[in-house]
Length: 355
Image 1: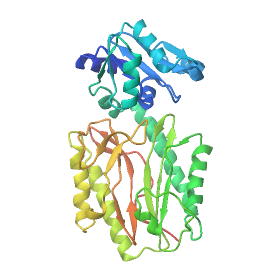
Image 2: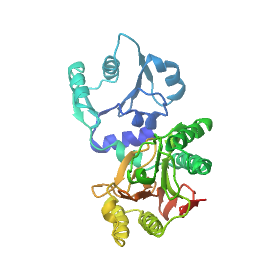
Image 3: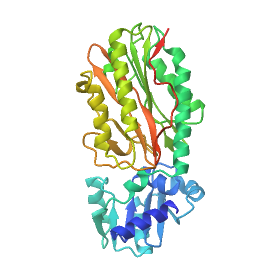
Image 4: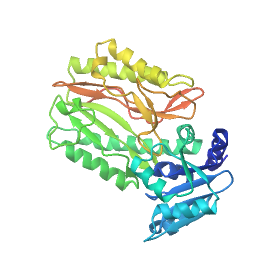
């Protein structure tokens, strides 16, 4: 079944006569469009794709399952959407709950005669369960991320700056026809205790933990992988912390089976870390959905409301961050299957000491 028909099926199940989608990641997922601005109006039997004149040629090339409506100055997107509503005879339209209050106020004024209602959860469960084609694209992005990690390992030497390693990561992805999925994290020594550290001019030193978190966006889909290294020889405390984080990753990954809750998977990682008194140093969620966006829909955390289903793809990334000591994070991208979790990346998770 085509993605659009899957959405229409859910619209019917929820009694939604018309749906307005403006989140660009959702629009791209639904239509295959790769531009940065567009909307979709979808009804029971019809619909339109709406974008501005910058993308007229591109939209007609990429969007195959919906009629394309484009607009140019002085018209605004809301003007084109009103035209779509009239053409499709839309009287009531459901909008995504992610829409800002300011946008809703503008629409309420512009869409005279059309009732705006917040949409029930239609798209999220569909986007969370990936098709085999989507999983294949994520796997390719993971393979490129693995290759990038191997490429930059040679730079993990005393005297090299975090900033230079970060630049080389970005160059590697660009040279391989991919986008940078997100600004890479390169955090050494005390900076590794900062989960989202920005690469700095700090130079690597012997004895440092070095955490590298990177991801590619390839053919519209993302990877997100983290490894932590030691420059030189690890001491006993570094080995202990690293080993427990690795155990937490392995055990929580095993817990990613259909029917489990996101809360339970997160809790398994914390139980393992607590065996060594380290759970207190793990302050973020265990993982998030992965797909068209790096931080795609869904979470593995203490506040998760998600249930694990076959076809989902998750990051699993336990971490321990101790001020004045350093931090360890190890992250895999995991596809949930009926037969158990499938790890989509292949870089070794064993402690790597860069001699």
